Image 1 (tube, helix red, strand yellow):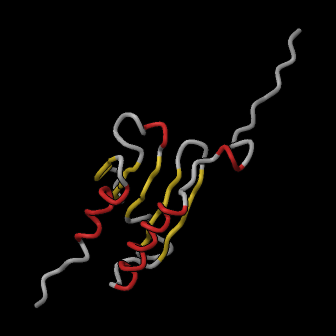
Image 2 (image 1 turned 180 degrees about the horizontal axis):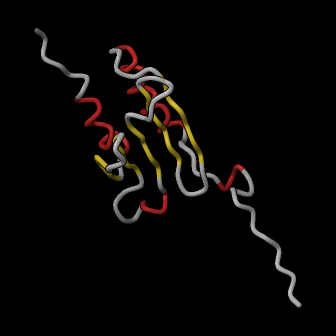
Image 3 (image 1 turned 180 degrees about the vertical axis):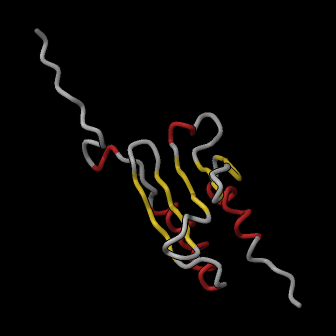
Length: 114
């Protein structure tokens, strides 16, 4: 008879989780601050899981996120570990450089003056 120890469902320690580092958060929060000032975004949420870190942006607190900025280190060598996902769940942009991935959102700030 073999005794098998069950594996925990979640990460064993906070070190096992994927998270955004200080530079990545600085880039994201700079964009977030500008979008809040423009009146486009109002709230955000951060999730750190075993395989993915997510920065979700909301127009209102009770809604589904408008955008999710995801970091998946396992995709670093393939498509790039950063992804911008829309409200419908489709990946809008993926890449190796976070600033390049977020550039599409920055363009939305630039509007013609009437």
